[in-house]
Structure formats: C-alpha cells, structure tokens
Image 1 (cartoon, rainbow, N blue to C red):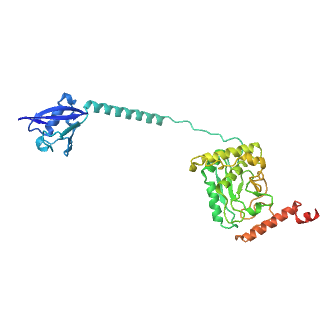
Image 2: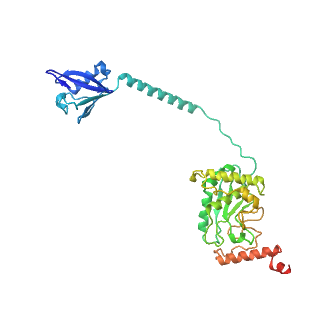
Length: 359
C-alpha cells in the first residue's frame, strides 16, 4: 500500500496474482469493492460476490462492506507495512451461472430417470422349486429351518441343551445351506448317549424318515458336559444330506461335501473363510472306513419307520420304557437302564452270556 497526498494505491491478490487498485485517501471498504468490480484485471467481480481477507487480525470482510470509516482507520498495520496483505475471494457471474446451469441439468436428468422408473413395471419373477422331494414339508413354505428345538427333559440341565440346539438352528452357515436346498425339518433334538452307545460303536446322529426328526449327540458319555460345537455341526451336515439320500452311496457323499462347503461359505460370522484345514470333515475319509474313529459312527444311514416320543424312548422299537414320573433321572439310573437295554439287544442277537457259555 502506498499513500500519496490525495490517493492510496492498494495491492489486491486474486488467484495468486497481485493487482494494483488506486483509491482516494478517504476511501472505505465499500469504495474498494466498487473499484474491484470495475477493474478489468480483476475480472469485474460484482460486490455481492466479493469477500476480502485482510491479514493479519482484521480477517474476512463480507458484503455489505463498511462505508463509515476509511481504510486507513480500519487496517491493522501501517500502510507501508510489508506484512499487510489483502486477498480477494470471489467468482465471476459467468462462472456462477455455469455452475447453476450444471446443477439444473443434473436435477432434470434425475427427475426424468425417476419418472421412467415409476412408469416401468418389471414382470414378476417366477421361480420353480428344485426337482425332487427333499423334506416332508410343503414346497410352498417360505421358511427353511428347524420347526422347533427340544431337549430331552429327563436328562440333566435340559435348558443348556435347548440353547445348544437353538445355536445350531440359528447358525448362519446352517441357515444358508438349508435355505438353498429347501430343507424344512420339523424337529431338532438331542440324542441320549446311553441309548446309542455299545461296546462296538457310539452313534453321533440320526435322521429319521428323511427329515422328520434329526437327533444329535450333544452330551459327553458321562453327562458332565457337552461335545465340541464344530464337531456337532459337522455331524449335522451329514444328517441333512440324509434328507435326500438314505444310503451312504456316491450321491450321498457328494451332497454331504456340497452342504459342508455351503455351510462354510454361508457362515458370515466368520467371514466365509476356512479357519483351518480341519474345520470341516472330509466325507471320503468316513466313506472309506464308515467310522469317524475306532468307536464313533456318524450313523448307519437314513432311519425309516417307528414312532418318536420326545422325553422318553426315541423309538417304538427301543425296549426302554419311558420315564413315567416326568422327573430327571440320575446318572446312575441312566447308565443302568442303558446297560439293561444293551444286554437285551445282545441276547436277541445271540451275543449274550448264555450264548457265550454255549460256545
């Protein structure tokens, strides 16, 4: 800023370039704004579009600008100070008009798109159910899951078993696989270990009548805890495959492997990634030996026939009478009843004590 007797020369910076403006000595910010609007070098920005940033301290000045005091009174530094800087912020009317035209064009295009979407009606999507009968439920059912989860009430802590069954029912991977294959199983329940344990094997699961009931071995043999969740989920994959195939043939193992992969990919809670190489079993290993280990069998194929009564004997063919009293049996009573059942079955098969003595 330079000051003569009757005029002042100001340097205004705009877009990084300095521009000199000459004003009367008594000029105000309003006079400076009018001089800027008539200056060709400053692109003739109108006062309404101007903002003046004065450094230091005075800060940003906005329209309408002060017309009561002169610039020499308002500026924070002497007129010849090199630290004094005035910066012009603003746009030409042509630039603002171009921006408004672009906004109007975009709004018109969006309005035309919304109108076209309202006029267009997509044809309804019809889906055919997959061929074959997978379960006993109606193919028009919109829910493919387990109808209900029920523990064995005569065993200890049935409420814990119920939570375990509900966790399996709500498992993201299991829900994904059941929805994809349209599996709807009326009942998911637990298996009494004592009733399915012999000297030769321990059954881990059963599928009755291709999806009428699925039983899973949740508890340890001593009834003092529960088996590993991922191991039980592997068994459930096996039993779901029995909703289609009863025998352990090639088609069964292929479907088991498919369900296994779908459960893994559909488990969004684990990111759909395999946690380890042992996360899911290999059906080919079980197909070769028919067993999971030396004494554990997944099952002996799809079970057909008989009747199911929850809370008592699981099959009408079982010699064990139901718990008539309705109270929970002790561990000693459960094991004693299971031993009696095994002895009766062994005698029927010719493996009892009498047969051993005859041999």
